Image (tube, rainbow, N blue to C red; front, side, top):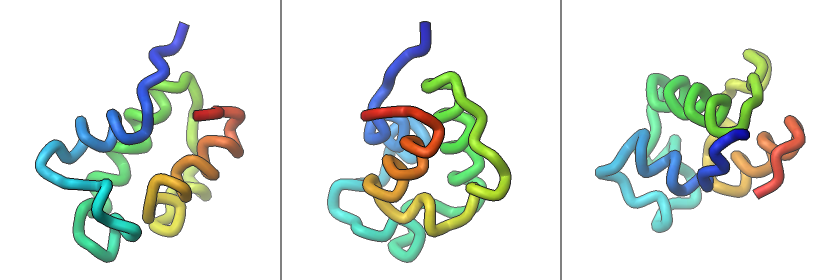
Length: 79
């Protein structure tokens, strides 16, 4: 059984010092860099038992919670 952590919980583990709730663009606001995105993808894969494809690992899929939810929905994950 997979551990169904929320996106917010996973984000706080990747960057505990960042306040994602106050941002509508995590990339532009400097809350996530490319290394963080790779770390986030690995954490999302593990938490939800999926494998996000390389073609989906682009900044626009990680700009905010809604974008990440849309990406996860593509892989059958519902929040």
